[in-house]
Structure formats: C-alpha cells, structure tokens
Length: 265
Image (tube, rainbow, N blue to C red):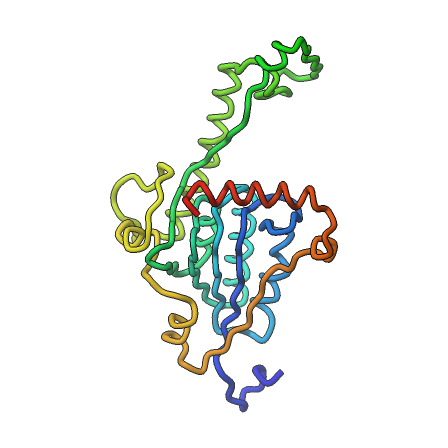
C-alpha cells in the first residue's frame, strides 16, 4: 500500500522470478509450463508495482510451444505494466531456456553459463526389429493416412522422416524470428541458429547476451544499494512433498537430469 502513496518515499523494488527446470506441458513437479508459471508471472508484475522484473533462468529447454507461451506472457505484462525485464542466466539457458531469456530487454549471464542451442530436436527409439524377433505382431488401424506418424513399432518410413523435418523447420523458423526480433542489431555475424552453444564472453561476442553480471549486483547498479527483492518461484505440490507419486516424480527427475546432462551439467 505504501508504494502507491506518492508522498511516501520507498526503496526500489525488483520482482525476481525463478525459472528453473525442463520446459514441458502439464503441471509436472519441477517442470516449467505456462499453466505452472502464469500465477508467478502475473503476481510478479502486478503486486506492489515493481520497478523491474528479473528472470533468473536455469533451463536446458523443452517444449517449443510452452517456451513461446511463457515468453509471450512476460512480454505482454511488461508492456501492459510498463515494467522493464532483465534476464540472468545461471548454469544454462539453452534451446527453450534461451527462448525464455529473449523475453527480457537485457540478458546477463555468468562467465561459465551455457547459452544458445537455437535449434529443434526430436528423438525416439525403433522397436520394429525387437518385436519381430520375439514374434510380436503390430496391429494398427487408422482413418487418415498420416495418423500413424513415426510409429516406433514399425520400420522407419522416408515420408514420415520428411514430414517430421518439415515440422521441425517450421518451429526452428519461429524460434529464429523470436531471437532476431528481440535481439535485433545486437546479434553478431555467422551462423547463430545451427544449435551451437556458447559460454560466457563467447555469448557476448555473438550478441546472444548483453554482458557478464549477476542479479543482485546488477540490479543494485541500476536501482541503487537500497533496492529490495521479491522472489517468486514454483513450489512442489503437497502430495509430492509428502512423498506421493514417487514413480512418476522419479521418472520426471531422470528426464530432467538427462536434459541438463546434454550440456555437461
């Protein structure tokens, strides 16, 4: 209430949103999605009229759609509330994690942070030879010739591979457009969109980040030593905290570990 009274002098306020984990649809504990982050982002921008919002990002990426939705929400609220946004990368902001970072007006990172991976990847397994060896028959019935795209229990089809690559190219183009729109003239020369990653000062040289900096000293530099922070982060669901859904939580943790391991983390 005091921050709304014009005659009361208060300290600058930065709302810090922690965005950590793999980006995935749904409301899985530990994962980032539009539905799980929306309440945090809305409160961060609208409570107590902050002077800035800081995104603290530590994500190896994940769902392109969820990355786009979260970033779009941040941009919309930034414009509606007229609040600048700063991103601070911890270990990694790669792929969808970097997509989140582009929602900020400035991107800062540690000199050891991993940034980039502007590309699209799909992965899976083929079990057709395995089931054939054990005499298992695959029976599938569809209405529509494309309903069984890339079935892992059937031999890989060239037309399926072609279609998947077309989908990937479309998503990749959208990702590239997002980076170009948000980073603009800051981007350097060379092929920045082939899935490569950069570390620290390398990311400055290619224009993916604005500099080396950490959230507290950088925000003090911008808003003074008396700046205060309000931190917003997801909490694990009650049942997860009590030990329920152990199997699903364990599988999710393994998937997250594998995603971070791609970058040696």
